[in-house]
Image (cartoon, rainbow, N blue to C red; front, side, top):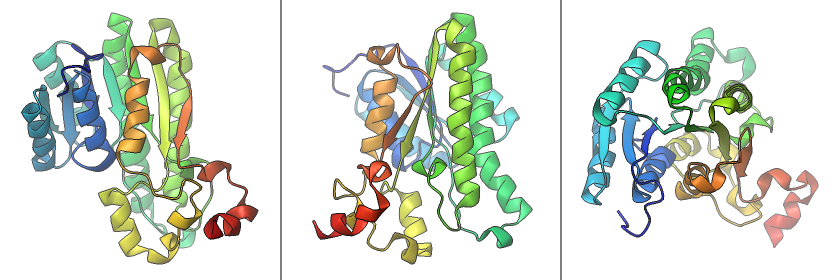
Amino acid sequence: MDKNRTRLEGKVAIVTGAGRGIGQAIAIGLANEGANVIVNDVNLESARSVADEIKHRGGQALAIKADVSSSTEVNQMVKQTLDKFGKIDILVNNAGISGFWPILELTEAEWDHMLDTNLKSQFLCSQAVGKEMIKRKSGKIVNIASVAAHLASPRVMAYAVSKAGVVMLTKALAIEWARYNITANVVSPHFALTPLTLSAIEREPELYAGREKRIPLGRAATPEDPANAVIFLCMPESDYITGQEIIVDGGMSVLNPGAVHIIERM
């Protein structure tokens, strides 16, 4: 941990799905700023690996295995956090999955799993942690969505709907809990090179062929790119920002579709 960067010293943060990818980058980034971090993941070994890295850097971390689509496991995670650190200042709802199905082939079970993991989990964690933040009249919630919440693509309807729900969930939290000095914001990445994305590329290579060439900034995002936006939203400097979405996509969402061929030749 960089001892010169401790703007979050003494703060306690829960990061869901923090065993790899963007969640790992967020957990380490918050710890670098002095926060005590709960590293949550369904894979305890992955969570412990990230927690150990934080401790090796001089920070404090606790790995907790929990399926955040289960209210029972979410409530237990919150209890463990309070038992360990006594409070919760920051919640980052990062856990999520992706999937590719034509609409007519999407099963009810696949739909339920996508919505439970990507949207229901954020509601459950926000509700459970929000109760504690309201008691203290302070807190920051940052949810992870995706530019897919705004841009339709073939075979990703369930994922896109779940992420669109995250955006509206965030706005509702921001409005309802503003009187308790709780902020809620959302970060929406696009095409970050994480284990989840790399797995998707392997399964559906035609959907990703040449994508980096079409990004105005000329590269895919690293996990640290969206993580840096999340960390800013957890800082005191963002205290007057709530109900907002930061899109981290290298300029893709503002690009005129008709100009894609020009970008590819630049």
